[in-house]
Image (cartoon, rainbow, N blue to C red):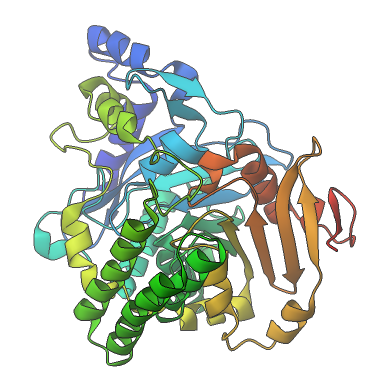
Length: 448
């Protein structure tokens, strides 16, 4: 059976006030987590199957501009598949970052919980601190992932019923370009069959540098690299041949082989360009996330967070990656189209990402079946600047859809350009700045 709610409450309370029954241990945990850095709630949210649960950390808004009962709640999902949401928490957009020493924390001035409640979940089952009861319980497709996310949210609302009525936004990056549409569509479908008191108040979804329609996206890498000057014409043709193989295998629904073929495209692109990482072609070194693992695997950190002490935290789970390997080239465009018809959608990308960047997003977006597509394509693309006047990127929006290109950023937008990311998410959720009703005020001007 799933962990009973009483046990869940105890875990959460233990995270909020570390080990009250053991003062010495509590003092040690406090040195790792200053009181102000502790989550408002954290622990485990029961889901099916039996004895399964997803780890979560929730941070209440620190400086909201809305009444408590209507302060938006954001859920952040990491990519992978199989990468922990705590990477987003402690390296990208949470209130505190792990320092390079792996032992201390520093405040993030651009945290996403300034205006909103912010929830991180280790998803899918088997990821991060969300240990699977058995390997067979690790999801292999988006339907199961979506059902688990909804079940976790219902467990959270049972724990704190005051959260249910608050506007809810589903967000994430990279492989969450699948999780978010799948879970969002599933939530709205489930709402139709649920009594009002059990519905999720979903108001919108946001996807950063997402993998959503791989068959269209895998075909863009050669062009992206060529027109950046990173490969020559002969190398471009070589990449196009590899891409064609991945597309053919996908159309034949040979999912594992197609995933392997995509991997060959990316590996060859990496080899030809000599880049430190395809996630950001301007970087001389890959993202330095190792300190997060050092920090989270300390006994004091696990105690403070209410995580299981017997689980070794991994940034990305090989077991989940293997279980989801056959899912990689499958599309969630039907779910994305469903969301465009029923709620607000934000797609954003860091301009320097060569894996899941601007060109790959525009490739799949051009083919969506949505009656607002033509108006969106004809909409003006505007230059967007942060509040202090720096170039932040470009915004195009019409109807339910907003598309943002973030300047000075790669795959992990909040880590690369925190100020722009914070202003973007706050503006989009609240309908201000470049997302306001007025045409070109609030930091936006027409692009030439």
